[in-house]
Image (cartoon, rainbow, N blue to C red; front, side, top):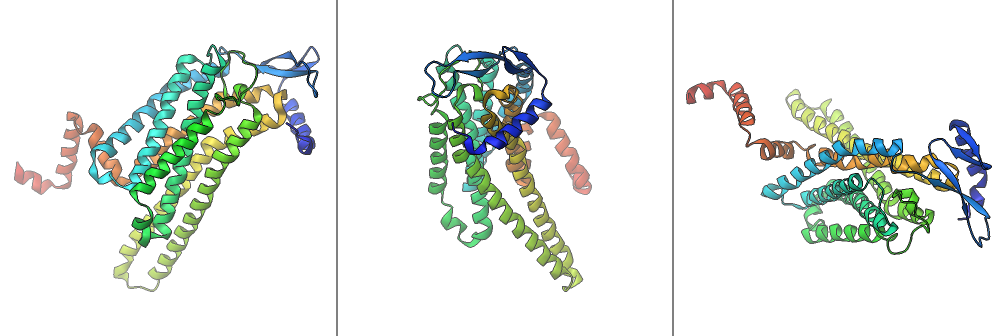
Amino acid sequence: MNWTALAPARRNFIKWIDILQPTFKNRNIQCSLWNSCENLEVVDSKNFSNSLKCISTTDSIHENIKQICLIPLTILIIAINVCVLLVIAVNKKFHNTTYMLIAALGFADLCVGFVSIGTLVTRASEKTLDLCLVRIGFTIAACIDSLLVLMLIAIDRYIAVFKGLRYIQIVKRERVIFGIILVSIISIAVGFLPLMGWRVSTYNKYCSFLYVVPANYIIVLFSSCVFIPITAMFVIYGRLYKNAQIHIKRIESIENITQPRLSNGQLRISARTAKSLKTLTVVFGCVLLTWMPFLITSIAQIICEDKTCFLKEIVGTHLLILGFSNSFLNPVIYALGTKDFRETFVHTCFGRFPCFNQRQSRSRSNIYPVLSRTRL
């Protein structure tokens, strides 16, 4: 790629990287102690006589850490998303458009969990590039689908707040199903573009994101399927946050002029609005916290090309785990964050255990001691 316009910024960035990372000289090539490097001859190249190629192995410390961290994370992702889907399926009160989106999000995050199993089994050491790109394709498709469904949920919340009277007419079941199918098709199509030919020319038996997909594909992927949904969520949740603040200020002004007997009810409304404002902050904060490091580091690696080998290793291991953790946080925030769903979730998943039933009966007897004695 031609980075002429960004050449000064690129040189300054590489200069700081050179200062921060320990290096040594090997055949007049600067190599990082985090990775090994080698000369790769480029035949009939117009721009280069040779280039620096970052290589890694499945036995690196980063891969070992990834394997250790993925085991409990994968179990948590699969367990909680299966439970969420089960609760939505068996309880008819959750058979509405909002929880259809929650179920779609749970299914996408469940796919991320299954992809994690594939990563654990293969240890990123597929024998051929095609097998590698199959796993990478499923990984990209699952993560992109999760992000796009998050955007659909944000749009649903926006319509519910600002178009509340027309919500039923706008958010119809057929439209929600169409939106879910559309984002799934987009995710699969974009995720498997490398398998259909948009790939690197060499493969060193190490199957990691930045090692097997070209820079121009990453730019298209991030700009179309990552930055657009994140920007949309930022705008939508920003407006919802601002609307919640205005609502709180109005209630506070009403409390100062209304009668004392109305203050308790108004305070409950104010507390509920403040809680929704806090939830919105947590929702978008988790998206940024889990995915922005992956995006920023990937872009930095593209700008610096192969002069910063250790960034490739970090993106495919530590930052990938951080991104996967979003699939565990999503059901916690969107599903278990609602009191009604949380109570149904606990009753559905744990209600058949005797110890849970005894604890529930004890709590009820403590709340209604007179009624308990009467029954006894």
